[in-house]
Amino acid sequence: MLSRIRIVLVQTFHPGNIGASARAMKTMGLTDLVLVNPRAFPDEEATRLAAGAEDLVAQARVVTSLEEAVNDCVQVVGASARLRSLPLPHFDEPDDMAQTVIQNAHQAPVALVFGRERSGLTNDEIRHCTHQVSIPANPEYGILNLSQAVQILAYEVHRAWRKSADSAFTYQRPLEDTPPSREQFMHFQAHLTRMMQQSGFLTQPHARTQQQLQALFTRAQPSRKELSLLRGLLNALAPEEDKH
Amino acid sequence: MLSRIRIVLVQTFHPGNIGASARAMKTMGLTDLVLVNPRAFPDEEATRLAAGAEDLVAQARVVTSLEEAVNDCVQVVGASARLRSLPLPHFDEPDDMAQTVIQNAHQAPVALVFGRERSGLTNDEIRHCTHQVSIPANPEYGILNLSQAVQILAYEVHRAWRKSADSAFTYQRPLEDTPPSREQFMHFQAHLTRMMQQSGFLTQPHARTQQQLQALFTRAQPSRKELSLLRGLLNALAPEEDKH
Image (cartoon, rainbow over all chains, first blue to last red; front, side):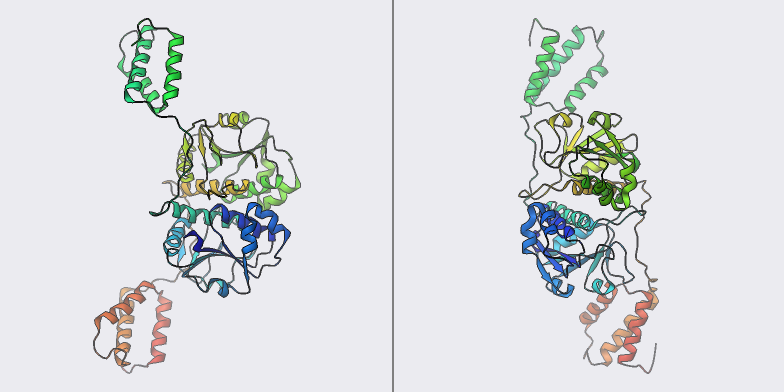
């Protein structure tokens, strides 16, 4: 489904931006790149900046009109820093845009169109779009580098896809020890409480202090191994004669 | 409040990545850049890639240890492509991370820490972090360019800030004509209906067809001016003798 999402770059001036955009796309699972009248392409800079995404650059389709690039698409989103007076439906937030893109891409190709580095898209090119989107930014300095804009919108599309009902995306999780059982954990809490009393830290039963420290260790969510380390530490600090 | 959010780059190899990161920061309203042992800095490449953000590059603080860079921070998020075995609290999703960053930045500085282009952060450096975050990406090609990673996390922080209760962020909206009043709109619908009947398009009253076309024009949300254009078009197609 991500394969139906097309990135279209119109008259890109710097081939390096083509390469960096291809890299940005590939990190977000997109593969369909179309270039409308790129100024200099193919070019070493495009390959160099693509890093591990030269395959996308090599497969990129080059066409001579935006119409040709998007004719088969059911939705065409123009990414534009400056809003035009032509009142196309406009997304204030890229995440709202991405939701609709993911929906539509179930059926047919959808294109995200990016304009020239300096001047963006012409009014004529906006006419080929069904929607506009801008990336909310610093009002004093809001023009992102082209490949950065591609990265952000590709990221938002990937995010909408991850969060959609039928995506098979799995998060990379750090290796974690098994959590302890409740019995093991309560043994630890009991040991801690005895230490607090025997050491003179709690001169009289003081429920609140006891509870606060116990809560802290609960929040820390120690693994089985970590609990074992903690118990070892408590034992080293104050060996108990009667172990429970 | 965005001013309390610090970007820390550790031992960046390519000065161009420093410049591009500064640009990415500035578009998202961030200004506090700290460099830990950059390989080559200051450098022309950093200034060149910064585009309009050379002020951030010029003001960047250069230090010799990560500790020095984050000592005053209440939260330190390590951005890491590869999760470490040290089980720090980890954010699967940058947007969850950004919510906590915005919360904490009300009180005190918060740092987002990025490592070396090739090897990321060392285990020792992760120890200076309170949290880890990774950017969910293509499992087959998930390593983003350093300045792209900075752009995405800065974007997520800006997004969390925009959506927070007390942000004064206003969206750039396209100029829109006034919407028509209900009376004006119903006049148009009545005119359209008469045309459908008089032209023979509706040979007999056909409520469904009528409703469908009326609904289409309602969805289009014509401005006052556009309604006027539509009425002019209807008049040109079939001049009425009795105008209502």
